[in-house]
Each structure stands twice: as structure tokens, then as C-alpha cells.
Length: 269
Image (cartoon, rainbow, N blue to C red; front, side, top):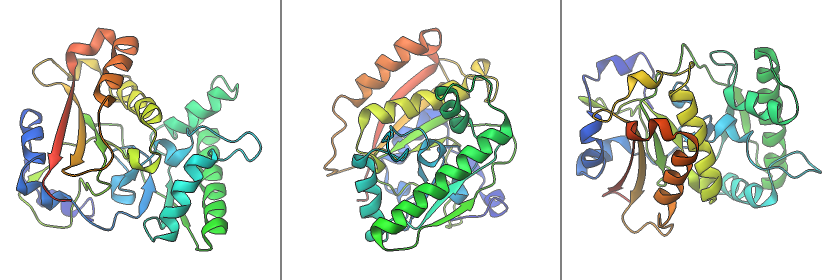
């Protein structure tokens, strides 16, 4: 994966109006890689440290009340990934104003105005406890480390990646660059309902004071929600676009003309 410094070599950001076509073309293979083995936040600023996205590295996943860790259905998926060497590292980050997902979690626990330090402590503690439990179950060490999240949010969309291969900063020195976006990987949970909740978090950040803000998006240049699949994918997308649209209609009706849902089928499995 490319470092932020080498990203300067990339010249052209693919226009949002051409993104669906590009991701369905052969050229998209330059942005797919086989070794995405780090789970990080969906935050577009931390993608160099974690290509597979879960909000707060999983801190918002529904939890088992006895263990205060993700429910068994999610733990089984993540444990199998560790066993198959598909997951090696979990990250947490301090970010701009603390981890937003961690703050959402703390608010759900009754802390009305969590501080940045409280969010950082919650994000780190959760990642360390999750990493320890996955290591115990899989009998393989899962690394846990901090990822940098410099500056404010500048995402222009969200990639809902079912391939687990999409890389916004590929090592290949290409002349084109994908627009920056949040990264959500539903295969980490196989739970469409939860994926829609993560998309909701991404939209709220992008259109809020911590993101680019609602004025940055128009009907002509909307905030994109790009479902990236590959041909032959056994996990069908049937119903998911409708679920996302329902969430937008219920929560962001004032912005629905500025949000566009699309699906791209990559040619590389």
C-alpha cells in the first residue's frame, strides 16, 4: 500500500460522474490487492493503516452483554479470518477530535458529552480487548496498533466494498486516483442492517461540521455511496440499495438530492 507521501505522484482524481464506469472496467484491477489484512476505522484518513473498514474498528458492533465484546456471530467471522491469515492487525486512532465512532458508543452508554480523551481511551481499550480475544480463540497473535488520522474529514463518498480488496492508495504508480471516501466492508459482518448503520455514520460525518459539510455536495456532484462487488460474488446485493435509500429518506431527507447510490461490478474476482 502506498504511503501518503508517495500518493503525491498520482495526478488525476477520477471524477465522481465516471467512478461507476471506472470501477467496472479492467483498469480497476490497479486498485485491488490480495493482502488487505488490517481492520481499521471506516475513516478515509486512516486507510493507509487499515484497508478493511469497521466503524471504530468494530466498537459499534452489537455486543454480548456478558463479555462486552461483539456478539458471537461477528466473533466467529473475525476468528475465522485470523485462522486463515486474512486478519493480522487491528488499529485504533485518536483522530481529529477523537474517534467519532467511540464517541457514539460512549453516548449510548449514557455519557452525554464524551471528551476526546475518553473516546481515545475507549477506542484503544476496545481494540486491545478484541485483539486479545481473537488471539485466544484463533491461537494466533493479532497485533493492535495506533493509526494516525491527520486533519479533518475530507471524504466525498463511501465505498461499500464486498470484495475486501479495494485499495484507495495502491502501491502501483498509477496516473489516476480514486476520490477519497469512507471504507465499509460488509463481509466482515455479513450483516446488511449493520452495514447500513455504518453508512449512516459516514453520511452524518460528511454532511456535518466535522466533514466537508452539506454545501460541498450538489445534485450534479453528489456524495456517492458506491457498492463495489465482483462478478460471481456469492453474497448478493439484492435489497441493500433499497435499505440504504430508506435510511437516507428517514434520516437525511433534506440531502437526498445530494446523495447517489451506485453499484460497480469489478471484472477481477
